[in-house]
Length: 159
Image 1 (spheres, rainbow, N blue to C red):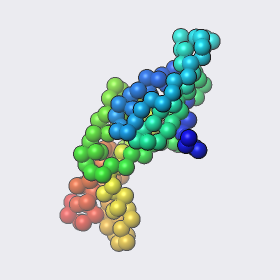
Image 2 (image 1 turned 30 degrees about the horizontal axis):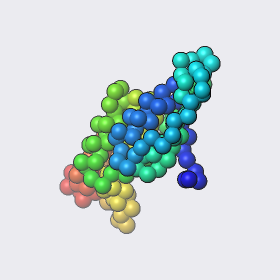
Image 3 (image 1 turned 90 degrees about the vertical axis):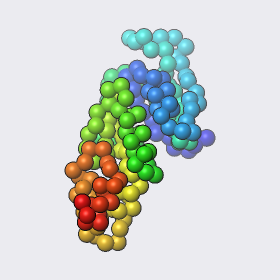
């Protein structure tokens, strides 16, 4: 078993969210669904928690009521090999009422924040030339969904 897992608190959509996420990412599956054995007090929910894997990484989704909600202090980072992956994950994670934010960030329909980032940006930010890295950073700051070609052009000074 994985030693450390991310634990996500949902109001009453843990199973729905886990099924949504596993439909998006390859090498993903529902591992276990734990129910209360009855309806949880004050709700129509019978599912307590869902353990699931996204791209081989395990998570636990808990139905625990509305006491807490997600915020931007924690996000899931999706490393994308190319623009095609950025476009795919961006559109899928926004399905059903998500919200595009800024600089490659979005909130899905459950309020969970994601960063969908082309590897191009990661490489450009590590460029030994601080001017190239700075131009890429400035270009990123003006984007909502990240565009790898535009980031590269900005770094190259051709944008």
